[in-house]
Image (cartoon, rainbow, N blue to C red; front, side, top):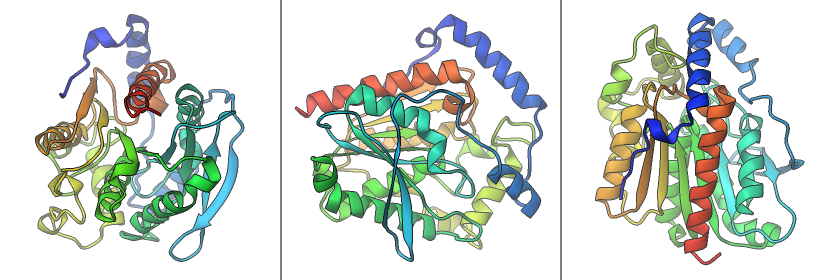
Length: 318
């Protein structure tokens, strides 16, 4: 059953934080990822909130399609219940595994899982399918070596923004190779699932916070150059158009100020219509990427995800 959390779910003190964060975002410069200078500025920024970690991440590598790729691993003491493959965001063009350290640390401790946050190649230097191939390589590595490395063959898959897109694609790939039964649940944050652009994407303006209209166009053109909207409606590119049957329970998280709002609304509806269980949390007054931009609101959202993932692990008897 699909549910929607609204204002009562967000504590009142957090509402003031959201207003402050959104006002600050309005005044901030918006580098253009369509230009080399703008892309360099964005890549030089950090998207990790300044929150101290309790676990010490361990760096590992795994075989990619063309070279070794980097993985950042958070593991609690004692046996783990599953391994979470986490895929960072960044519009296919920016970002790094470190961006999600706060969540990786929290979910590893709260859910008693190993969290593996992996690198993938970035556009425009490496357009699609390079990043996608790297994410599949990470899933293949964990499916093969995860039991020996972490003591369990059970998987969770998640990611935010472009990472949400790649997480959905990884889930479809795992199903295609007969590994869907090893996936306990999916945690999908403000992902883009229709590259031909949903109504909320098309409604974005130059003044839209975080993901304005120009940034959306630039990110997509960098990552998927030369492809028409009709081509991008193919399920190979846009998971919204895929057969979504036989997929694990999923939690969709998105803010109501996010141009990717419809992507989560539509994907959750199609997920449920295909017979796959899902829940949908729409967070009021929240922009794209709010979990890392507003620390107190982000903490409440991360706690909700941890609680949901723990419930899925409990239901699976892990």
